[in-house]
Length: 492
Ligand SMILES: [Zn+2]
Image 1: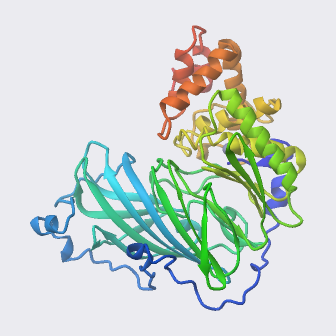
Image 2: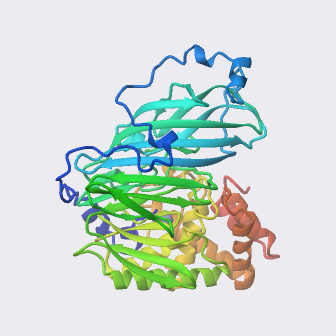
Image 3: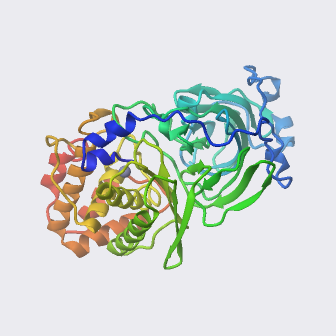
C-alpha cells in the first residue's frame, strides 16, 4: 500500500482522509437480507446460514480424542503442542452475502488445510480485518465437523483444532462470521467500508496468517499472508451492484433484486473486491492479459487509468524480464484512503491527480510481483515489497527522487516508523538504496538478480535478507558497506 500524498503532494492524504462520505449506497428498495446460498451446487457451505447465536464456549465432549474421531474421518489426534504454522497448504471456499442497506456482511469459509510444516500443530491463526474494523461475531466454527470455540484477538481468529494435526495431515475447518462494514473512510475504515456509494472489502476472508497487531502509526500493511493454490468465492448482494473482482472470468447469476457472482482464483495471498451501483467497466488487453478499469461518474478518467495500467504492465514486465503474474489486472476507483494492492486487483482513490495517478498505478501494479508473486512479512520487513515495488515503478516512470526525511535504517517493522517518514524512508530511501546497488552491479546483473529472487520464491514468502543476499550473490561488487549501514539488524 502507499500514500500517494507522500509520493508527490503532502496535502492530498489529509484532504482525502478528511472527506468521509456518509452517503448511502444506491437504491434501497430491498428489505430482506440476502440468503446465504448462491448456488444449489454448494450445499455444504451455501446452506450454512449464519445465525446470530454465539459460538458455544464449551469445546465439549466431542473433542475427546481417540478412536471414535478416527472413525469420523478426521486426522486430529489427542493432545496439544501449542503450535501453529504458516507452512500450511490451504484452499478456501467462501460464500458471502452483503446486505447493502445495512452493510452487514455474512461470510462462510471452508478451509482445507494440509500441514506441510513438518511438525504437529494444534491451532490455526486466521487473519481478517473484519475483526478490527467490522465488529466481528464468529457465529459458527467446526474442525472436521466438530464444534470448536474461536477466540478473537486483535485481527486474528484463533481456531483450536481440538487436538493435534500431525505433519502431513489435512483438516477441514468451517468458520462463519457476521460483521458490519464501516460507514465511513476514516482511519483504516476505508479498507472495510460501505461509504460514498462504494463497498470495499480488503482482507475479509479468514486467512491462515501470522498473528500480528493491526495498529501501526502509519499506513503500512500489518499482514503476513501465505499464498493459496485455490480460492473459490461466491458473493451475493441484495441490490444491483457492479462487482470488481480479481478474476479473469466471473460468473453472474440471477439473485432477485440483487446480484450473485462466483469466481475462482489460483495462487493468491488475498482476494479483495470492490462494488458500486454505477461502476463503468472499461475493458482493455495487453498480450492476452485482460485489463479492466472500474470508474464511477465524476471520478477518475477511465482512459487515463487504462493508459497507465497498460504502460505499467508493459514497462514493469519488460524491466523484470518476467510476465505479469496474475490472470487479470483490475484497476478500481475507490472512495478514499490510499492506493492498495491485492493479487490481480488494485485500488486507486478517486481524488488522485494526474501525476500521482501514473505513479500509484505503477506502484500498485509493481506489487503484483513484489507481494503478489513473492510475499514477505509486510509488517516486519516492509522493505522487501515496498522498496522493490517503488524502485520498479519509479524506474519505469523515470521518477526516482530524493527522500524528504532524514536518513534512517531500512530493516525495521512498520511500527517503528512515523506516519510522516514511513513512506519517505521505506519507499523512497529504500528505492534509492536498491538503485545505488543497481549502479554498483550494473543493470543486467541487478535486474537479472531480482528476477532470480522472484522465480526462486514464487508463490512463497521471502523477505529482506533473501532479497539482499540474492543481489549480493550476483555481483563481485562489495555491497557490505551499504548493507551494514542501512540494514544494521541484518548485516553487521
Ligand atoms: Zn506499496
